[in-house]
Image 1 (cartoon, rainbow, N blue to C red):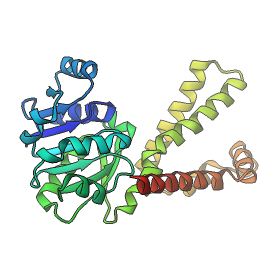
Image 2 (image 1 turned 180 degrees about the vertical axis):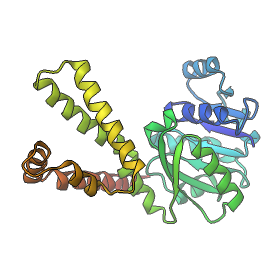
Image 3 (image 1 turned 180 degrees about the horizontal axis):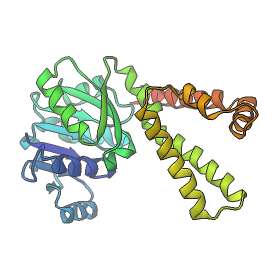
Length: 268
C-alpha cells in the first residue's frame, strides 16, 4: 500500500516513523507532502519516506491519503487537491472538528475515515478513536486500524459524534494529567523538595498507579478505598478535594472540551 501523509508536523512525522518501525510499509511506499520548504528539507534528512512539495507529484500515487494538517488549513488544501484525487482512494483525517461529510463534499470522495489520536502516540502509547463512512470496506478499515495501532491503542466508534467526545477525553486528556501533575509538583516543592525530587516523586507515582490499575481488575474507587484509611493522610487530602468540588470540576472541564469540539465541528 502506498501511503501519503499530507502535513509533516508532529503527528504526520509520528505516523511515518511508526509505520516504518512496524514494517507495515517501507520507505519507497511512504510519502509525505509538506508545503514548507524548510520543513520538507528537515523531513528529508530524517529518511522516513519520499518528501514532496507539490500535490500533483504524489497524490495520484497514493492508495491511502492521511490528512494531517491544521483544520484551518483544510479549505485551501481541499481546493488544491480536489481536481487530482480519485474516488477509490481512502482518506484518513486527523483534523479536529472537520466532519466526514465536509471532507466528502469538498473533495468529491466517499471512502473517509476520521480519527482522533493524542500526543502519546509519539512514543507508541497513544489512544485513538476512529470511525468511517459506509463506503469504506472492512478490509480497508482493518488495514487503517493496523496502521493506527502502531502508535498505541485504538477504539472504533459507530457514531461520528463520539469522535468529539474522544477529543474531550483522550485527545485533550494528557493535558489534564499534566495539569494535575504540575500542581502536585508545586505542592512537593512547597514542602521542601527540590525540582528534580518533586518531578521524580510525582512522575513515578503516576506511572506506578497506572500500572497497578492495569495489573488488577479493580476500579479506581476500589483502589482509593484500599489506600484511604480512616483518619489518615489520604482521607484528609480527598476530603479537601470533595469540599472544593474537584471531582465535579474535572467532569465540567471535560464537558467544556466536548462543547468546544462540537463548536469547532459546526464551523468547518
